[in-house]
Length: 113
Image 1 (cartoon, rainbow, N blue to C red):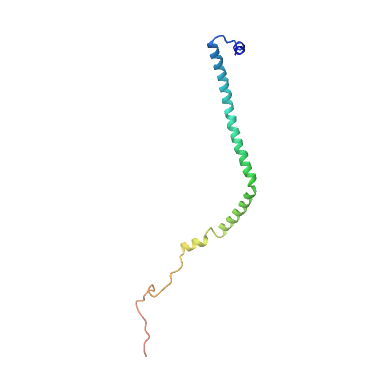
Image 2: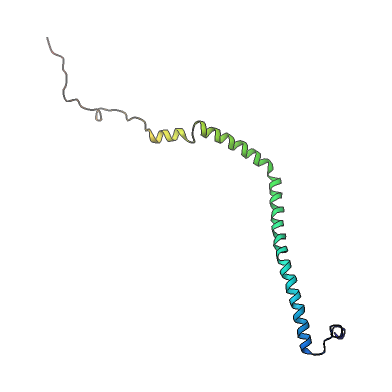
């Protein structure tokens, strides 16, 4: 402790407060310089994790692209759910029964000769 005081030429409490104030200021400036580096390290860790996921699932992406291309060709040629849409917009004709058959105003009967 005495060597610290003599090395920094501290003779009283005001000098000690000034020395500690300078030390704290330097420590805070170093901390402020390190904050962006810590954020960059966290970002790099995320990128490394994502690259690992990419390498692990690289083959699945090719399979997905192949299936998606097939899906797109089908939707372009027939339209997605084209048959279902046709059923919705063009319902099947109703079956005509006696009760729903139109009645003619006049009936034709064969004449007797």
